[in-house]
Amino acid sequence: MDIQNVIDYLKAYDGPPIKLMEVCGTHTSSIFKNGIRSLISPKITLISGPGCPVCVTPTAYIDQCIRYAMQENHVLLTFGDMMKVPGTEGSLSDMKGKGAKVELMYSPFEAVEKAERHPDITWVVAAVGFETTAPSYALMMQQAVEKGIRNIRLVTALKTVIPALRWICENQMDIDGFICPGHVSVIIGSKPYEALAREYKKPFVIAGFEAEHILAVIYDLVRQIEKKEAKVKNLYTNAVHTAGNQKALDVLKTYFEPGPAMWRGLGMIENSGLYLKDSSYDGGSRGLVQDMKLPEGCRCGDVIVGRINPDQCPMFKTQCSPMNPFGPCMVSAEGACGIWYRNK
Ligand code: SF4
Image: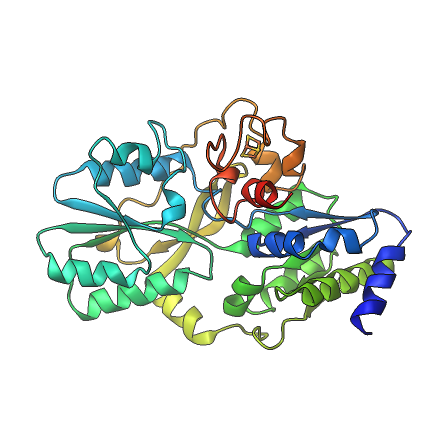
């Protein structure tokens, strides 16, 4: 079916209301940029999922990073989007003003170079992300081990998407289908969604990021829901294969193992975290479970699981903005509130 026919079908849809979740922040962004909502029936609702790893990182993790950054002869390396996430006493950005040694990195491999050049300093890497970024931390570990570098620690808040989707299926029964994340699926493949589709009788379709990709996935999901089907389909075939990226999965498995992880706004989810197997490189990542209550009035917990859209939070665009974020979903470029703020 050509794209105009897809749009005509979706625009004219007049069946029972359908709620679809896009799991990935990049899809949320693309849906806005391409005006996808204006091309589909108001009876089809698109809601954002927990696809921002920074937004779901708990307070105890930020506190642990700050503890290291305040220690003598330790430097914390982090990507920029972690800087404003609130910890108990403040964010990394706040603490930098109070003497915390924090440097921005553009790639985890910088840690290996810096550790080689400055053996008297312990370089602590804030490793946050989903399956998309986790393999680069595994490759970094491989380099460090091969070179015999010992002055590196990783504080990990690496998370896996399938256990979170299972949590959502268990707790959010009113989602009719899922737009599966493209980048994560490149690594894990389409197979891991099959058990979810079978158990929860919901369709899962993998999407690329262009407007026509997303429209094609919405069309497929709507047709499946109308026909009461619950299949896994891969509509991003030039990048995603059934078994995923075996090389990336192998290196991940060599250095990391699954364990329970705390998701800000969701709670503890079994086997949803990735932890270093070699604990001598680990910076105390396990058991970072404490999370402060979200600031009063912040509805991030509801935004992350798609119970409300960001603009339904009373703080949205009033007290909460990317310049002055009130909750974690406004902090990161991939956070649903931040994306809605910039595009709505
Ligand atoms: Fe929290 Fe701000 Fe989003 Fe409201 S708009 S849910 S306060 S991050």
